[in-house]
Structure formats: C-alpha cells, structure tokens
Length: 381
Image (cartoon, rainbow, N blue to C red; front, side):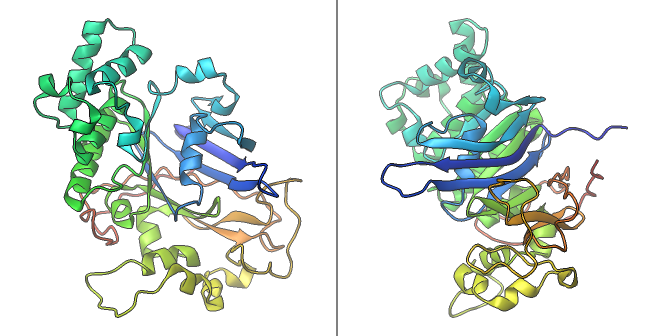
C-alpha cells in the first residue's frame, strides 16, 4: 500500500537577494526541505531574518525578482513544481488552492476600499460566481470568523476595525475560497494574549472543519506547543532541527533549539537572569550532546570551525553543502556537519505525517511542552 503523498513538498530550496550596494548576495534560504501533509499543521520557528517568510513567499512566487533570485530547488504541490509555473498559472493557485495570511493586516488591506469590496473581489477572482453570490460568500466568511453585525461591517473600512478584527478579516479573505493549504505568517503578531488565543482557536476550528493543512510561521513557542503537529526550526536560512512537536519539546537536540527554549520565561522556575540563545550556542559543550556523537555527529553551526573529516558536498555546487539534515531517531532530524561518518549514504528528506490527538494545549502566552495523549506517528515510506 502506497504511503499518502505530502500536500506540499519543498525540496532543497535556495533563495538569495542581490543588491548593487552589497559585495555579495544575501543567502536568505539555503538548501531547505520540508513537507506538509493534508490536515497537518507545520510550525516554522526561528529568529527574525532566518528565512521563514521568504520560504512562504517563494512558495507562491511572491518574492520580487529582482532583487530576489531562486538559486535552486523545487516546491511540489499536486505533482507540479510551483516554481516552474507561469504567472497566469499561479493566479489559479493563489487564494484558490493555497492562501496566505500576511504579518500586518493593516498593510495587507487596502485602506481606500471597504472590507466588503475587498472580500468580494477575492471571491470573484477565484470562483465562478455572480456578484450577488460573491456577496453572500463574503458574508458567510465574516460570520465564520466571528465578526458581528456583518451587514454593517461589510461597508466599513479597515481603519474602523481593531487589530484583532482586521486579522479576522484577513483570515476570512484567505479562507473564502476554501483553500487546501494556508500559509499563516505570524497571524498573532502585535495582538494581546486574549486575542491571540481567540485567533488560534478560530484557525484550529476552521482547519478541523475544512480538513485544511497549515504552515504556521511564528516566534511564539507557546503557540507552537498549542497548535503544531510538526516543528521546523530554522537558523540562517537552514533547517537545524525537524521533529514532531512532542519529540522537539521532550528531546531538543540542536543547541540552537535548546537556546530558544531556555531563553523563554517559565512560570515554574524562578530565575534572576534568563539565559540567551547566544550563551547557549557559544558553549562548546552544547555541541557534544548528540546521542550518536561516537559516530562522528557534530551539530552544524556557522560560526564554528568545521570538524576534522569534512567531505565535499554530495552534489557539486550545493548551497548548503557543508551541512546536512541527519535522522537521529524516528521523526527527528538534526543539522550536522557533513563529515565522513554520515556523508556516505543518501539521507532521507524530512517527512513526518504525525498528527496530534489532543484538541487543546496550553494557552498562547505560555511555553509548556505538549503533554496530553500522544498519537502514534505513521510509518514513513
């Protein structure tokens, strides 16, 4: 029996930005691979500038070229490489098949058009309906995201909505055409904790009722603990750790992941000074903790000297040729230096079909490891 195929598969994606003022291109994404399965939530986490948003924007061909440039890789959706499609072909996918919620709803909504006009335009663009049918779909979309007095609010402008309500409008616009995949780029940024919880609960309900998959980009590890099935940790354009949400919180292996978790305040432990990510990754001892260290596994970190026994990249000219994602256990990958110990064989790309079984996890403002009943990960192909 064939294993189910991913809904979205990003394979060795590399994206750079070029500028006349810069001496060399800025590598925003370097050899990134990830998968999203139907109905699954993949959380992509990491500090600002690590390449999270660029990955999502590249998926929909929204990175301006120039200055952006796709150096290599594929983005597979429904058996087609999205990066090879024309702009006309992409228009049929954006919004209808894959939708995106951007970071700032106020900058994403046009201030000179009413919310109703913008919702109706999005529906007419992607669905073969009349204007009256589009109006009814817009009303239903606003009701679905919890907007009251819809008849009046359709005639309001974006500045007449609060931050939380604008985010709901963006969600309604993204989901009006019932996409199979939602790219949510910091959907709770700049919202207070109460509104964050409401937005996350709303997204979870809509995702469950519609069977929609979601790539969730966030800084908030509390949000990850609450919503994610699988977590992809990024640094400097690369994936440094990839695991299901339980495995990542219970056994963080890469020093950068441990640094992220250690730098978050905890309600259960009182500390005078919180450790920083820089303190963790600057400690050489942190890079000797992998259980397979006897096999020559050394976690990758750009500011460290390559270990002895480094080998050439498997593929000539590979952007991320000095490192590779190594599978250290079931449903768990860690970025390691490409040494003789692991470079001999072809490592499988990260592919986890795990879905959590708990419906509700910790509140959005806390960072507690997921602790309820755990569903068994499906076997990989």
